Image (cartoon, rainbow, N blue to C red; front, side, top):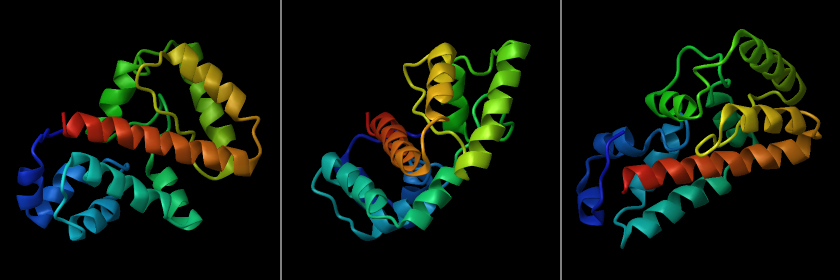
Length: 167
């Protein structure tokens, strides 16, 4: 992930460079970065950040579901973006025992069947036991509650990614 810490540099980026840098803030959701690019120039990094979050928050339920479904399944997904790989590895999801791996696999299948999108959690600062326990609790939720929780988690992930880019 590229880092950039000057609003002047951000405001001077070409569309391609802007999307290259900010396009995965919301997992594989380049259209948010595209919309944010079209709203330049920004006075400061906070304005850029809040604009991207606002674009996300104003998204339709259908667009949110597309964003949710762009997220990988935990512990079992093979094709991860660099950001997701780093985040999952930092939570040791790449070091599951066979039993843990099977549990994640079963929960992923059950969760997606129930809700229609993968389980989403901001894994930064969490270990695999916390994530697994959270998974086991949230799978009991009803759809609207879980939709709102997934939406919050996507926002947390975006927050972490934006802060990493602009640090």
